[in-house]
Amino acid sequence: MIFLRPDILVLILTAIILSTLILANKKQWLPYLGIALTISVIWNLFASSQYGYNQTFLSIGPISIFPLLAWMIGLFSLHILYISVLPRTSFEGFTKQLLFYIALYWPILLIAETIGYHSLNIKNSAAAQYPGLPFCDCLHAPLWMQIAYLMIGPAYFLCVNFVPLKRA
Image (cartoon, rainbow, N blue to C red):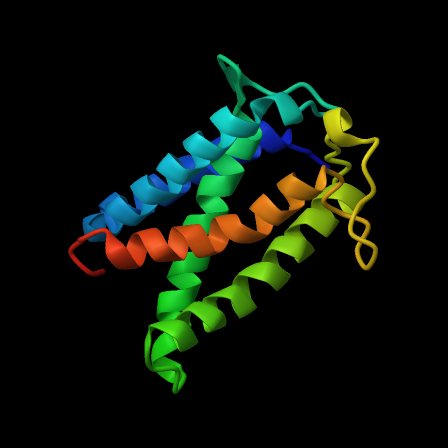
């Protein structure tokens, strides 16, 4: 079995996403990807000292490629899922849509973190001394970082809803 390093995998996924958006003539979705990248860059610059993995990842300066692109891919992919599912719901109004987004984001985030930690052996050695969340033994990080992880998705939702974009 061929196993790709997580940083190489997210690089390949990023190339696939960009190629698909361009070839499928979905260029109007590029700003959503750009917002996801911007949030990811800001987060990774702010929290880069908290990331130190048990594997060697490519980096750009102080920023590891893996969390940078994983956050971007996760936020953008969840947005695509959200806008695909929302029309099939009866959630009208900003507050209900935000709560629906959070109801998608939190479980998907925790499932991804749990799989990454327990199945793919992606461990943040810099935060290993912190306990994970008790129900999934994931998100081993200081409390402020755990809260930030849970709030990054809603922050993305707010950005894509309040930054004037041509709607996809």
